[in-house]
Length: 247
Ligand code: LP5
Ligand code: MN
Image (tube, rainbow, N blue to C red; front, side, top):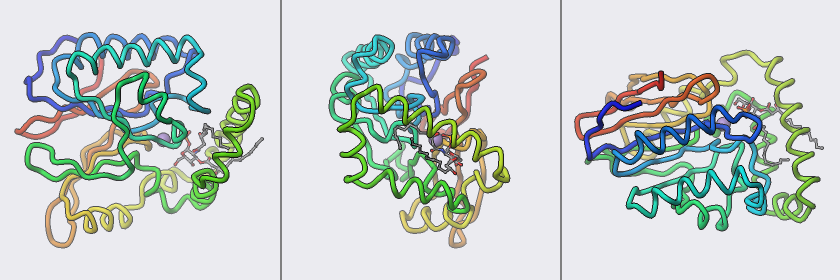
């Protein structure tokens, strides 16, 4: 992990799913933060950074506090740090932002990436063929539901998160793979509405560079890798973007 980067580089990662139960991933992330990230001028985390975020009071867990401190150290050294929530960590709040030093971005949002307006998203909102997931998503994104959930003791919240994870894993075995990918028409519409020709997202764990046509114009869609077996990141410079997998 020591390939030199252009100092203008902007990096994108997502789907690390960090948890104390998978220490190897956390170690890979620490190596990334030590060797790769400091060479860049900005790092965008596009969701599912944590395996499951049940509320900012979970920062009392040493594992979470250590990860947050690792980020904060780089943010304080001048690395611009941005976070967009995924379906695992949509309850990330201001205390976590304070502990990490990241700036919380709405999903989706458009950034100016070296003069190219670029749409960023976690990606799950465009899995529009996954009706069961979209119904679940609508429910848990309501303020009333979140207030009720966050009012519970942390152990109860962990237990619920575990139970949802189990339901979700079971449900996924019964879904066709295409249902769990983004819907191409939803993506085209989002690009058209945002008037951009570049999109970067995660969630599907299907790292790729897609070229597509939006309203007669060529556009590109970068999909970030997860960090289950190994990790990976998107490197963007004024010359363009490329996916790098961590060997
Ligand atoms: O995450 P991933 O990629 O494996 O799967 C997603 C969809 N699943 C989810 C659920 C998350 O994995 C678990 C989030 C837990 C942490 C959140 C913090 C606490 C919030 C608590 C919320 C109550 O997002 C999966 C998609 C897949 O992406 C691909 O797009 O298919 O969707 C599902 O599998 C959802 C199911 O189809 C339906 C919902 C099952 C939930 C049942 C609730 C049971 C409640 C029990 C309570 C005691
Ligand atoms: Mn996700």
